[in-house]
Image 1 (cartoon, helix red, strand yellow):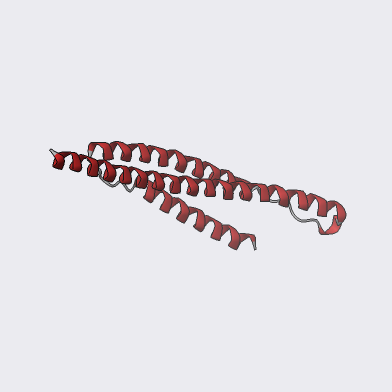
Image 2 (image 1 turned 90 degrees about the vertical axis):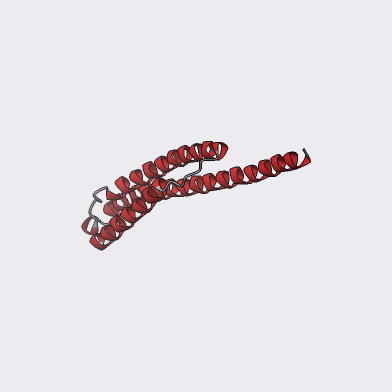
Length: 136
């Protein structure tokens, strides 16, 4: 009888540790999504700053005014904020799915969110490199 009780308490402790690891992973995904959203916000606000500076410099130096920007930075910023929001939602869905799998003892790794993040970061990186090459 004591062995069954010890087995159950050991199982609960291990189960608790697995749930806490799942929660830490979820929080890491949330931090990543917040970071991507913050970067998108900064990119979008930087575009606004550049537009305002070009207007100020255009009024001060009529002959040397900067050409108005095309608004690509605003589009990239909005895209990054949307991507961060989508990642936060997918992280929550993954967290709840894994939580259920832990309880049912049927855990199977899923790489959908990992692949989405990798492809998204790769696409944004390539776009920013192309944008920087063309803007110089």
